[in-house]
Length: 336
Image (cartoon, rainbow, N blue to C red):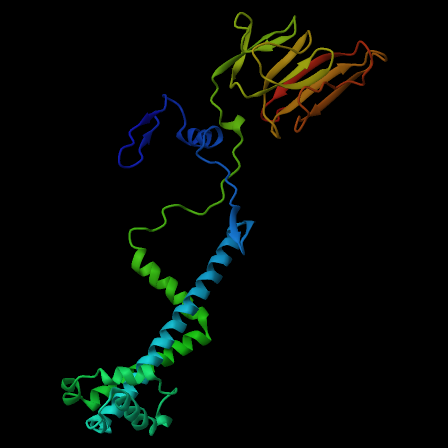
């Protein structure tokens, strides 16, 4: 394994000659952290209390919260537009009706305020709310230059524009869902470029570790003494195996067992057959002829070994003492 990570992650895995890249990929997922299970539940504070929520609940909570924020923003914007429309109407009445001329002979500021109040309130029906003192104070701040250059047509255009936006805001408030979707689409359009998803949503196949493990050990057997393992290097070689494999053993007395491979394991004397065990291998068939120790009658069996309990001894005979196997074959392709 060569780690060339700098600015970007780059890890190279150099394989030995003859090693399958596909099996290596599966082995990486089986034996390393290429794939790990992460609980998506998160502890968050909701209503001043901690709660453990899954992804769906978090997303739903976030969407509801965003909808409420968007609603508040629309309400704020609605208030701003209504205030803009109200003051534009006041300004229009104040200038077009020449109310500003009525204050020319006022001797005090209070008299000015009172005169403007009376002047604009004559047109109260044209406003959307009552005129306040703050409204009148804003009117007193309008300069003569602005009054002289006042364009009634442009003022009407501005009010029409405000009314159009106000109508749209009210429509969005009455149906927030399309507005919220559009908000998310705008976020994607504005910030999505260069941040496209690079991962894929897919279901991984279940990888059996013993099917992708590298055969890094050699299995040996001492048939007479009843030992098997990868540490018996002076005894009979059986096959290559990995250090996580299971092995299946048949003895001459008709007993069978499956155990995890070890450095040295005693499984009983007079071993007839030993090999790496492949669980759920339907093609491998065993042929067996044994003699019953009590009746001296011979029986034949043809069978598969599928799911079994590890380290449990199974008797393939009738169980009579002195029973023994007369003939045995292991057939990887279901041969007779």
